[in-house]
Length: 431
Ligand code: GAL
Image (cartoon, rainbow, N blue to C red):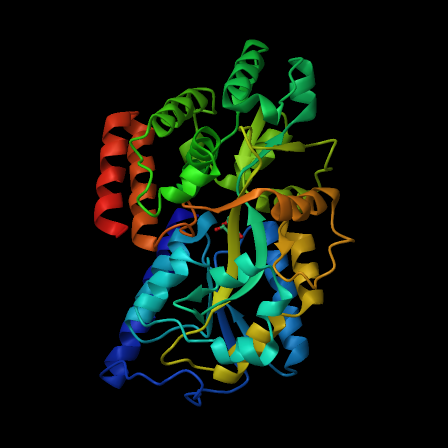
């Protein structure tokens, strides 16, 4: 899998480089004026390649094809959960002036990096024309903006801090996980699972976002939603006692996880849990879509609790798509794509496969699963915060520093080194 990713990345970079060689330069054509390179095409990049992700993406592709008869769609997804491979490939193409027609992006922090780089097109006129902001929660609409203008279109809302559980493994160990018992309660339950002879935790952090998300869930639980938000405005420190406690908890949880965690992917870890190899798996609710896709029965093969902590926190991971500010190959098709994403029926059909909830409040959730209905309720009542593991809480550069610090910490377990690099990054990158 890894070598094929590399191949795709280097192919993208080579294709982009040869385009420059042919044209001599990467001339900038503003968005809205098609370059004429065939009007009935649409190239989409994303990192949706697992079973459920690919099925959900196909709902969108079928939708845009229906809306634009004769359109041919090139699904240029690059594998690697959390998208770091896909974003590398995209960066090479943007740099070379050879972008796809549209790309997957997280709102807020990650989006801002593309806007600051002059790479994402201003979509404010489309938003106004479609009156889109009035059709979704205010927080969701605001996350799609940078400096008051819209640069992306949201397709769904995921929750990052869910603990998926194996009911029969827990029952055999005579353990229940009570979210209200907080992180201390969770750790003592996991130790009881260990005493029953089963590995307590399944983790698959071949792509580092999985452990970055586990650590952020612990920090949120220990520090609370308000302090979590303050980390990104420099009003609360990564050096705080609660963060240090979360790092100690994280080490404990890592010691209770499968030893091969860095060799397996997020979806493999979730399936391993439902197959009885362990009791719990922390993962965003794209795992819900993936487990359904694998034929697993909610409530029987797997269950869930919100990640234990002292309050109900919803770790918001948004998915959406932007289009290039320059050199867009098929502007009309890209606009048709964005409009398709804003169709409430498409949002509901996508959510059913993906495990997310629709971004549009006008989309019908009554036919979605009980899990998704509870997520939709919680999104209204819980303290909603943004994910750092998915570069939403802060710009991409800071999120990368965090991902690197988590990778290093996985090997060293050095709390002081982790807090030192993060407090330094807070000062230099979050001004
Ligand atoms: C996230 C994305 C989800 C899911 C996950 C694993 O970044 O928001 O939709 O695809 O990565 O790949």
